[in-house]
Image (cartoon, rainbow, N blue to C red):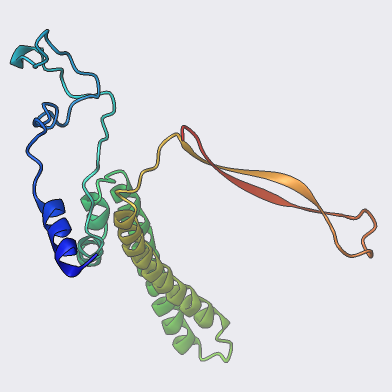
Length: 201
């Protein structure tokens, strides 16, 4: 074949084909695959089927982890309220209240022990060191509770839009595993087996 024949063949192949009629089903989209036609083959507007609505997927609006983190840092419990976990707010405030009272009580007892130690002019400072230790532990526990509520708000905002339903399950059960070494008396070792199941798929 020479170049002229190849050029003619490519030109013919690129021409649109007008011999076919337009597809009558191309204008019908987003409907189920079963259609109702009249005798002449066209659909009437009153016979259009409704879209398939058997599967309704509810998508939860995601939460901003950085916003939850900022709210929890500004006011303890506000990050939990932003995530919609209102039942956690009294727990956060109760834990901070108890640790705050522990700071107040241990600080008072430490100051009283220091005054008694200075008045008695004794060399035994075990009571003073004990109350100082309790006071420092109270501050540490309060800081941990504050940090944990910030972490809880941040992680909860990250996991807010995850799909967790009854089709997902995690099972933990005891098991016996054979040992590869011959030094064991029974040949087996106890352990735990974790199984992750996805049902309905």
